[in-house]
Length: 137
Length: 137
Length: 137
Image (tube, rainbow over the protein chains, first blue to last red):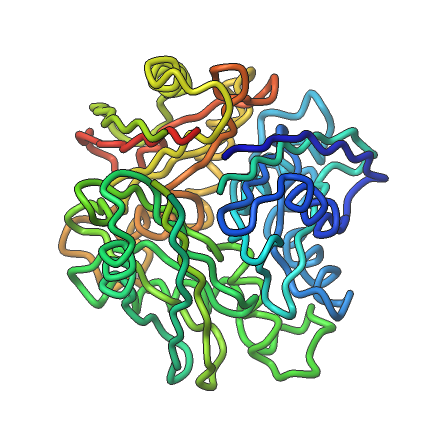
């Protein structure tokens, strides 16, 4: 059994946006009890992230770490036509994840207690983002 | 057909622990001949890793590389309540993988000759870790 | 329904090689309309990459970024028997992806407008690479 749905999200610029609840809703709609929930981000300048969900400092620390690792306006980049944050956004995307697969158990995504799923926007400006969710079971 | 099982592992602190055999056993139990084997780690301070399985130096080199990239006690981190190795563990998790999907062929995980699957513990202390394995086929 | 096929590719050394079309062909052969397309690279010194597909500078910038992050011949590595580019290739593999899952919609991989799938060869010399593609639906 396969169920597929598109989730749309409008970001307000760089930062992380929780999507765990939206994924759980798709799993419930599908009626699948045991199987897999696959989420796929249709963009190359944002990521899907599994992250600690309790202390918001974790996500701001991640942001700071990524900024140090891949600074905006880094002089080694030739792809600068779309702004100083565009190529760093592509690198962040490659170093993290565009697709995540979660186990489905008892009709819901089976996450650990401290795990949340986030859309991580890497561009400075807000963007419309689209995630295709596929449930198999 | 979907088969799901939880693997539990007690780590002895930072380092990598082979789980290829445990995954192969779940595939055999499932009876699936052709399909997918999905492993999901229910934690945000350890990783699942596909790595060269012949020379142990590869994994100690990886450990050393990661330590240089994300040092314990890094001054840019605000999330320090759980110790100097906790936020680095979250960063390592984001930069690597919490879930891995392997092809199942002829009733087993179809890995390359030099590929092994490891649980990579990022915390300095030992932890109880739980992996949900889902076989579809 | 599960369909599985092996794609073989001979690289000409470090760099990225498009495989989107090859994946789309496997999906079409499978006849699956809605489901998942999983690609798994059977090697630990190359990656599968989802990347911006329009400006080739993006991929050369990524190469340059990775070279700075994980330089060939880095003195911290002990695993040097197979050459100065071998251990960096393993690190690049761990920091990126060996397996990618794409949604299948309307009988094809449902990629974003600017997304392409690439095999990223990390070794300096050309290598024969094998990708197992599994379609579920």
